[in-house]
Each structure stands twice: as C-alpha cells, then as structure tokens.
Image (cartoon, rainbow, N blue to C red):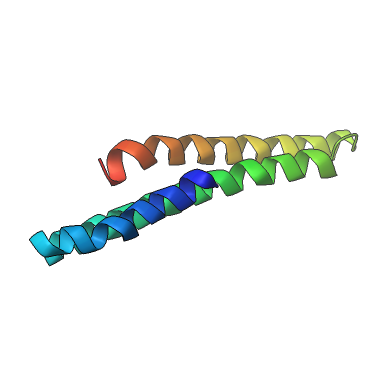
Length: 92
C-alpha cells in the first residue's frame, strides 16, 4: 500500500515542476504514474483476495477446494501479470 501511495504522490509532487517545462508532457507523466498505481492496486487486491479465500475455505470439502484452488491460481496469475506490466511498461 505504501508503494501505491508513494507512486501517486511522486506524480503529484513533480507535476508543478514538470509543468514549467512542458504542460502536455507533465500531464502525460502523471497519467502514466496513475495507471501504474492502478496496476499496483490490482496486484495488491488479488493477493488480499487469495488470503481471504484461504481463510474462508480452509478445511472445506474436496469439491469446494478444487474451485478455490482454481480461483486462487487465476488470482496468482493476475498478480504476476500486473507485476510484469507495472514497472517497465507503464512508466519507465
């Protein structure tokens, strides 16, 4: 969560400085950092959802555990993709 806040905060803090040079580029930088923060937030939420699923369905039946395992694998894949897309692709 600190990374999410710090990433958004740096964009907002640097905007007035970058605006003096070129307003369009400054706005593009802020937009890219906000999108990067969105990817970070999705990754955080997927991990928190896995933790909740694990706590809610621990010790459940075999049929439910298969469904929970499938959903868990999907959420792990989502977190891995957000990690891959976040740092290098959105705002290098």
